[in-house]
Length: 70
Image 1 (spheres, rainbow, N blue to C red):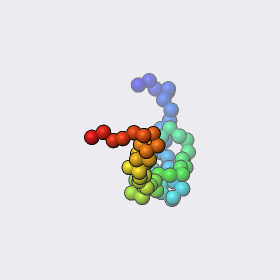
Image 2: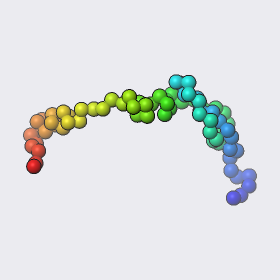
Image 3: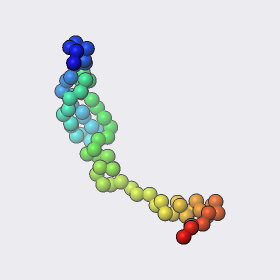
Image 4: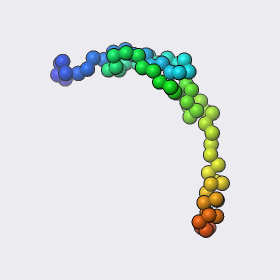
Protein backbone atom coordinates (compact mmCIF):
# COMPACT_ATOMS: atom_id res chain seq x y z
CA UNK A 1 0.00 0.00 0.00
CA UNK A 2 1.13 3.53 -0.67
CA UNK A 3 2.05 5.57 2.35
CA UNK A 4 0.50 8.95 3.05
CA UNK A 5 -2.70 8.49 1.02
CA UNK A 6 -4.83 6.62 3.57
CA UNK A 7 -6.86 8.39 6.29
CA UNK A 8 -5.78 8.12 9.91
CA UNK A 9 -7.32 5.10 11.71
CA UNK A 10 -8.46 6.07 15.22
CA UNK A 11 -10.03 4.39 18.22
CA UNK A 12 -13.56 5.77 18.69
CA UNK A 13 -16.43 5.12 21.08
CA UNK A 14 -19.96 4.74 19.76
CA UNK A 15 -22.46 5.96 22.38
CA UNK A 16 -26.13 4.97 22.13
CA UNK A 17 -29.01 6.93 23.64
CA UNK A 18 -29.79 3.86 25.82
CA UNK A 19 -26.38 4.26 27.51
CA UNK A 20 -24.57 1.43 25.74
CA UNK A 21 -21.00 2.20 24.63
CA UNK A 22 -19.08 0.31 21.94
CA UNK A 23 -15.33 0.72 21.45
CA UNK A 24 -14.17 0.29 17.86
CA UNK A 25 -11.78 1.73 15.30
CA UNK A 26 -12.72 4.10 12.49
CA UNK A 27 -11.48 6.95 10.33
CA UNK A 28 -13.70 9.34 12.31
CA UNK A 29 -11.87 11.95 14.35
CA UNK A 30 -14.16 11.88 17.40
CA UNK A 31 -16.75 9.84 19.22
CA UNK A 32 -19.97 8.86 17.46
CA UNK A 33 -23.50 9.12 18.88
CA UNK A 34 -26.43 6.97 17.73
CA UNK A 35 -30.09 6.72 18.70
CA UNK A 36 -30.41 2.94 18.53
CA UNK A 37 -28.03 -0.02 18.78
CA UNK A 38 -28.15 -3.81 18.99
CA UNK A 39 -28.71 -3.60 22.76
CA UNK A 40 -31.97 -1.63 22.46
CA UNK A 41 -33.31 -2.36 18.93
CA UNK A 42 -36.53 -4.47 19.03
CA UNK A 43 -35.21 -6.92 16.42
CA UNK A 44 -32.19 -7.85 18.55
CA UNK A 45 -33.94 -7.76 21.94
CA UNK A 46 -36.75 -10.13 20.92
CA UNK A 47 -39.47 -7.56 21.61
CA UNK A 48 -40.33 -7.21 17.93
CA UNK A 49 -44.04 -7.08 17.16
CA UNK A 50 -45.10 -9.59 14.53
CA UNK A 51 -47.74 -8.53 12.03
CA UNK A 52 -50.84 -10.59 11.33
CA UNK A 53 -49.95 -11.38 7.72
CA UNK A 54 -52.55 -14.12 7.36
CA UNK A 55 -55.37 -11.67 8.10
CA UNK A 56 -53.95 -9.15 5.66
CA UNK A 57 -53.68 -11.75 2.89
CA UNK A 58 -57.29 -12.87 3.42
CA UNK A 59 -58.49 -9.26 3.36
CA UNK A 60 -56.60 -8.67 0.10
CA UNK A 61 -58.15 -11.78 -1.48
CA UNK A 62 -61.66 -10.75 -0.41
CA UNK A 63 -61.12 -7.23 -1.72
CA UNK A 64 -59.83 -8.28 -5.14
CA UNK A 65 -61.83 -11.50 -5.51
CA UNK A 66 -58.91 -13.91 -5.61
CA UNK A 67 -59.32 -17.42 -4.24
CA UNK A 68 -56.68 -19.72 -2.93
CA UNK A 69 -55.61 -22.48 -5.37
CA UNK A 70 -55.26 -25.98 -3.97
